[in-house]
Length: 319
Image (cartoon, rainbow, N blue to C red; front, side, top):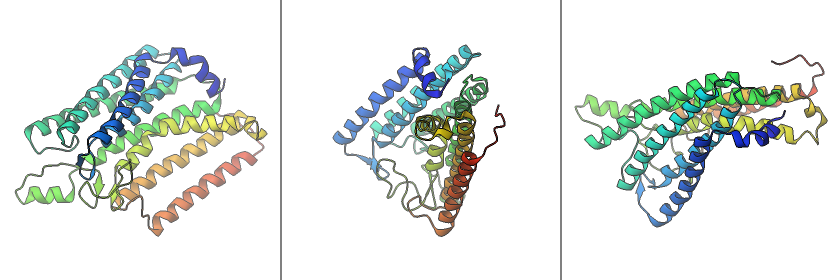
């Protein structure tokens, strides 16, 4: 069974609460667009409702994907269902706090300016830790997924594993910056502890909608890229399947599986590259020669790997 056929046959068995959560977040994303048009306030240089919008879109993709992944489990589906329910509850509660802070014109993450802000951020930090543990457990359960198509088999596993890596990279944003540490040493008390910008304070010029810094490193980028491996690698498997009518070599599921593994390795390299770039305080919009060279080497390695897979004639089994 291919990944497309599996999607069609299992749709009515997808995890219902996460499907509803994805749909609700889709509606909320639209409401956030309306809020941005009506409420012109900004926070750290970005529209006040931009962050709730981005979280709603990302959450909708996240829960739609997990609702499908849970349906692939021949065993432990009830356990996976409870874990996914927990994800829905935790994310929903965190999102309510995020919107509450946005409505007040206050930063939600890293904000310790007042006792209320600190309490909200501390609560969100605990929620994120619980969400990470639940995602780790779900990722382990993905080892038991049953998809006959080999490309889909590997896309699901590698996508879940790399998504967990991306979620983990969010931890980099919780460390105090050099400026905040200096303020502490001088006897002061910083209003923010942690941040996503490397080399400068949070805020300033950023890419449209995404908001990623155009003048410094931004740790949100590896976090985002890594988390969405959960969608990217299954989409790669679907794309390869769609090309089978034009490229007969892709009708071999071993070839497609190998290409998915090459793609997963390349995606892991991309996560490492954007993490390295951000930690060097370099903007995604202005890569230097070293970054461009590393990216070129990564693209070349993936291209050569894919070419080797397509041209190979032997067919050892991938299990």
